[in-house]
Image (tube, rainbow, N blue to C red; front, side, top):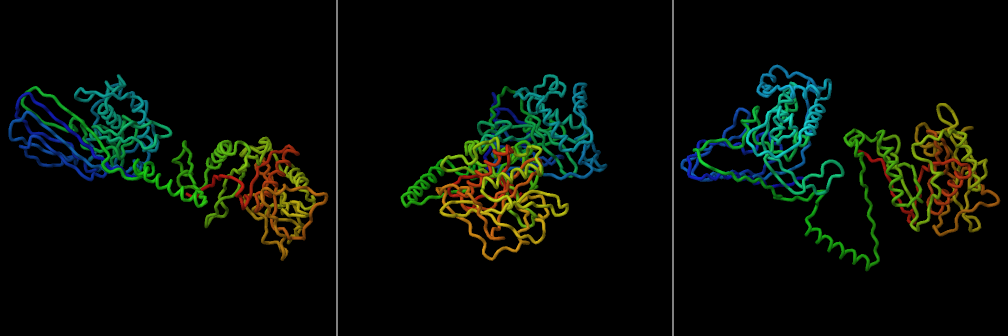
Length: 604
C-alpha cells in the first residue's frame, strides 16, 4: 500500500544589504526518470520581481532559469511536493543478454553515447588498490554492483559535512569518512574504473518510520524525515540507470527522488547563481509529513478508528454472550525462511529442500508452547490440488482440552528426519506387538508388496472400533484379495495411502464404526479377539520403514475417544519393543474435544 507524503523544502539567503542578483539556475524539480509518482509540484520564489523559464539540460534534467529585476536583501526558494510513496521493487529490470555477467563491453553505439559517464577523473593509488581488491570476474552483473555498493557502505563511515565541495576519492578512502555526496562521487569513480557507465545524482531522500519494527537488519528511522541526498546510478544495458546508494548500501527505491543527474557532481548543485559581494547567511530546512495516510496491512486504521471498531466489537460481543452464541475464527499465517526468502521454493515453487525441514522444526517449537510437551505430532497429508498426483504434506499437533497428555514419553516419538537404521524387520516387530496391544489376532496382519519389484514393503492391519457388551474394543476381519499378495499402488506416498482398496470386492454390509464420546471408558483387550465378517472393514492401519525410521499409519477414525485409544496403543507398542515411531495418516474426523494446529504445504 502507498503512503502519500508532502515534502517542503525551504532555502532562504539573507543579505546584509540589498544586492543585485545575477542569473540563477535551480535544479529542484524531480527528474523525468523519477519512478516515485509526483502528484503535485510547486516552486515559490522571493522576491516576486523575477522572470523564470524552464529548460532541460543535455542530461534531460529540468532546470529553472531565474533572472531578477531589482535589488533585494533576501532570496527565498520554497519547494512543495506531494509524492505517492508506493513500494518500488528496485530489482524489477531486464538486462540485455550480453550484459548479464560482468565484465561486459557496451555495444559500440551505446558506448559512444555513454562516453561522459565513463570518464575517469581520479586514479590515486589507494583508489586503484581498492578497485583491484574488490574486482571479480564472471559474476552475475546485479550481484556484482550490489556487492560493491554494500562493501563501500561498510567501508566508509557516514558523516554530516557542512564544508562546501566534494572530497577527493583519495581523501574519502584514507579517512574512511565521508558525507553522502563524497561517497556517491567515490562510487561513481569506482564504477567507471570497472568499465561501467555511472553518474552522480542529487535529490531528496524521504524516510518514513516503519509501522512495525523489522525483525532483522537496521531498525529504520525513529520518525519521518527527509533531506537533500546524493547517490550514484550505473547504466546496465536493457535495464537503464540503476540507482545505488552507497551511504546505506541499498538500491534506490521509492524514497529516492532524483532532481539532477550529471556526469560531474559540480553540475548537480541544486542552486547555482551569483550576487554582489556582501555578507550573507543561509537558512535551510526540509520537512515531510503524511499528506494522506491510506489504510494498509501494517496500519489499516488510525487510533480513533480503532477505538470506534473496538467499541462496536465489544457491543457485538456483549450481545452474543447474552444470547449464548460462541464464535471461533480460523487463520492461516504463512511462514517463509528468513534466511533464504528469495529462492524459488519460497516464491513460486511448491516443493523445496528446506520447506519440509523447517516445517518440522517449527512444529516442535509450537508444540512445546501450546501443548506443553504432551501433544501428538502428526505427519499427514494436506490439500490435494487439481492436476497434482498426490496431496501436499501437512504437519499437525493435537492436544487435549483438559490438559491430559496424548503422548507421554517423548523418547518413543521418533525425531523427524533422523535415520535410526530401521528396516522391514523392525516394522514386523512393531506390527506384531501392536496387534497384542489392540487385542487383534496376528493372522489379520497382511504383508504388502511393491508393484514393480514385489519386495516386501510393510504391513497392513484392517481395524475398526466396535462396542461389545458396552465395552469399547478393536475388531478386524480377513481381506479376500484379488490375487495372492496385497500389491500396493505405485508411488512414494505413505503405505496406507497406496492400498488398492478399489480392487477389493467389499461386503455389501460393511461393519459400522463405533462412535463414542470422549468420556466413554477407554478401549479394552478382551479374552478373545473380535473377528468380523470377511471384507467388512474397509480401513486399515499400516506399519512400514522409510529412510531408517518406523512410520505407523492411522486410518480414518470418527471419534476422538477411539483416536486417542489407538494412539495410546501405538505408544505402548513403541515402549514395549523399544522402537521410537512417527505417526502419520488421517486425523480424527470429529475433534471437538481436541485442540490442534497444522502446518500445511501451501500452493504458491
